[in-house]
Image (cartoon, rainbow over all chains, first blue to last red; front, side):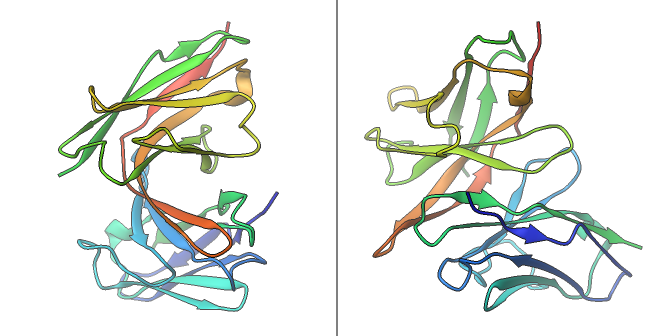
Amino acid sequence: SYELTQSPSVSVSPGQTARVTCSGDALPNQFAYWYQQRPGQAPVLVIYKDSERPSGIPERFSGSTSGTTVTLTISGVRAEDEADYYCQSADSNGYHHVFGTGTKVTVL
Amino acid sequence: QVQLQESGPGLVKPSETLSLTCTVSGFSISSGHYWGWIRQPPGKGLEWIGNINHSGSTYYNPSLKSRVTLSIDTSKNHFSLKLRSVTAADTAVYFCARVELFTTVTAIEFWFDPWGQGTLVTVSS
């Protein structure tokens, strides 16, 4: 199978920048996608194809990639950004499509 | 705007079949999109189950493929999931979602947007 590894938690003060990373061997060859999941709610797509932002998602959400790591950056964090964040991608063959282990972003 | 709503029994006995339906409103299921299922055990992460399009073409998670069947009914604008031989490990919130899928030279890639609100299915006797 294939695994995407995320740090379990990130804590940030309001107005600061939060960075959530996701590591996987195939990420140089496959796009990554990011979802926000607030408690008790369904996930919401915030980034697709590494760095594209869907309509309706605030500009403070951005995505980047470097080698085997992709990063979701939340600039000027707001209290409403407190949530779990999951990356999603696939292995090099596109056979195993998986989600990352998830990162809890806490706004202090 | 497109909305998705899962429905089905909230309790299933071990060894039986879990059956769920996702009803789509505000969008035709006969469009070029795929439609997918994802699940999340309580307090845990997300797991992709499978995708289906209007013509019945499917992609399944290899780890679940032997127990899963997806189907689609364009006349009712809904699609369905059947998971056979369930155990307690299949207890989860089950989400349906619209899938954006594209093919590359070597693989397929896809993402989910939007999602239904999810429905909890508990496997217990």
